[in-house]
Length: 218
Image 1 (cartoon, rainbow, N blue to C red):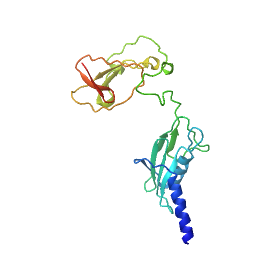
Image 2: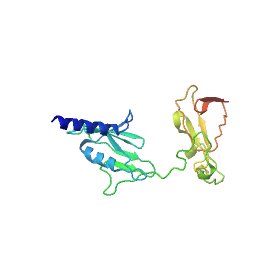
Image 3: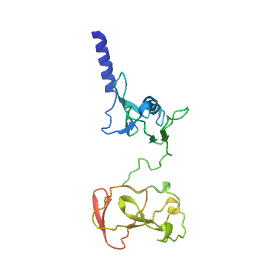
Image 4: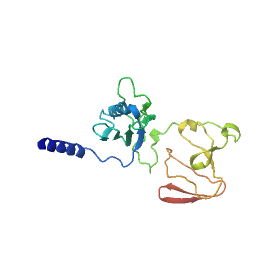
């Protein structure tokens, strides 16, 4: 009995040492009676090249699993059995493959997007010209009444899209209006454009064109 216990402890420690530390935060997914089917399906997803995309980092209790932490591909999921199943929809990295067969368990879906030509590209540098959509010039009139009117956009600011077709995807032209002065609950973000022009018609705005660099426009 003592020998068996030592062997088991050694096996557990080796297995634990082979796993990386899971992310401190996870998305909780209630699975109910579909717990086992969902866990098996998630572990059958493959990354580009055929390696498992997700792995079980933790599961318990061993004699009757009620939860499992599944990680990989920049994702951490906490599956639990103690509540009715909720829908689970995943957007997987480009190049991932779905398992053959009858498809995912009920309430689950997975989408594999096309390869991103800008993946890994330095976001502080202009986008490479060879990847930009071809410019399609044309004349367009946008009227404030009707479909060209104002709508609520990012951070509660009002937007008018002056070029809905983006000139083939190469331009974004918008009017932006901020109704009240003061701080806007915006955040640092990234636009996939090669050139950006900000023109202030009335008033002023203080923005951060690059993270940590504050600039004023009047």
